[in-house]
Length: 216
Ligand SMILES: [Zn+2]
Image (cartoon, rainbow, N blue to C red; front, side, top):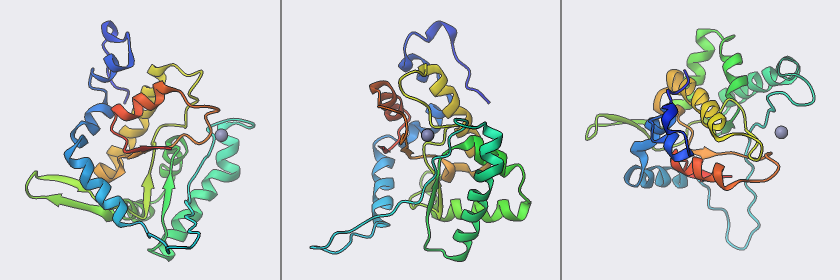
């Protein structure tokens, strides 16, 4: 599932990306023209709030460390599997609810334990914004589904100590899984780095080059 890399062309991150990693090929089409449609779809879903009032937006999301104080297995069996279970139930109960999921290492493990019925339900949550363009004969996701994947790496990588090739590899692994299971609507559109102990310009550059629309 890892992207093929040209060992003679890995002097910089740009060189690796231009080697057509799956993440790069997957997102290249969205530059410029398509980006504007996605932005329109995203902002059309935002409640603008009340003028002269303090408007608070609550974003329901995950930050499930893929191993930290305890092991990956301990986190998964003690907490993460129940988080995903309860999210699916909550989304099913109310179509106005939204959730964003990040760490594909855990989601992949959970996914492999689900029945076809649950998988189809989750695919429906993700694909709610899907349309097919007759002009391009291509699927677009102009609106965000009930469940959205953001960042979409195997984990949320550290930005200081991690080599860029590992960052590309682990995001490619997650993106390949999402594309395989959810198609276009599984494509992450937002970089989500909420616990990296400081940001690096290299990560911002990489995320821009894979066409993430925003980076938090
Ligand atoms: Zn953390």
